[in-house]
Structures are given as structure tokens and as C-alpha cells.
Image (tube, rainbow, N blue to C red; front, side, top):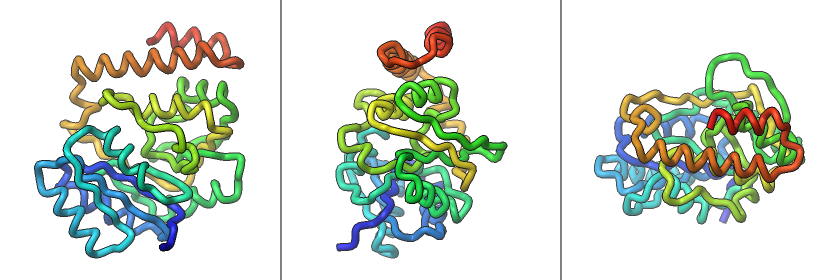
Length: 247
């Protein structure tokens, strides 16, 4: 069986209106050596049927149907079966809207073995390319948002996930929690100006419907990151103190 270069993980829940555009944008990529893992997270609408329909059209698409357990559990289940040398995440209501996004950024990983993660643009503004090296440098870049707190605008070497999974029991800021854990095993993160991830702003998304539970999750993640800053040699006092004062 052919082993794909890239595994693309898409959790799916109540997105029948947006899911076809998401999948079509992935299939339109000029880089074609991928597998797409769609995780139907107990979606009560027609999203699961859409996943199955695409899987019958394209042998590179795999579908997992599971009871609802949240985004972290869905991504973790996909990571357990992913076979690619690289891993990327796409949210099911978003799109990759430049067809060369995967090609250009995988090319960076292929030619720069010291880089474990490539981050590509999630907005249309100017992007300053840079490489962040070592645990302290990566943590400082996360705090300063040079490395965004998202998983979905990045391509990862799959070996990063040998011992890392998204945190269970947290439904908000789980991406940043996971990236904080990655600082222990990542050599370098490169911020690229190639490609574009289209983030769809929805009034009913978790980001825009902030609840008390999400506030608690954000606090837990912030404490996790602060603890990592405190225990890491080389983090500047200014960054550590500044994050403490704003947390």
C-alpha cells in the first residue's frame, strides 16, 4: 500500500454548509500525494453523509465515524491512523485557498531538515519570514504570537506526534496547549510567506461564543504555558514577566 507524504486531518461536526468547499480546496492543491482523514464527530446533520460521498469519489479520502467527543478527541483518533511523513490540520468550515500552499511549504520541510514545523499565512497581511530555534525561542515566539496559537496554519513532521496528543477535557485553547508541549521536542519553527489558510468567521463558532467553561479552559492553558516558561532556561525575564502580568 502506498504511504502518502502528507496526512490531512479534518474534524467534522455540523458543517454541512461549509464542508464541500473545504474538501474541494484540498483536492484542488497542486500537491497530490496526501491522505485526507475526515472524522465525523457524531455530527447530527448531513456532514457524515457528505464525508462518505467524497470517500467514494477519491480513494485518498478516509472517514472515521465516532460518537461526539470534541475536536481534540477527533484529531487524536485521526493521528492514531495517520500514515504521512507530514501532518496538517484543517478545520471543516475553512479552506486552503491558494492551490500551491501544500506544495510550497512541504518543499521547505524537504529542503530544511532542521525545521520541524512550517507555519504559513492565515491572513492576507504582510508576513515576515523567520526561524525560531530551540525550546526557549519557540516558547517566546508563541507568547508573542509570532508563532500563532493554531494548529491549522501549520505543517508538522509526523514524528512530533509520536508522544504528543491534544489534551482531553479541554474544549478551548487546546491548540496552544499542544504547541506548548511541542516546544520540548521541536528543533525549529519556520514562519513562511507561502500559501494561505482561509479562516471563516462564524457567529456560532467557539471563538465568538465565549462561555464560562471556555474561560476556565483559557486559564488552564495560560497556566500551562506560564509553567513551561518558568521551567525553561533561556526565556527572557521580560517575556516571562510580561506573560505573567497579562495572564
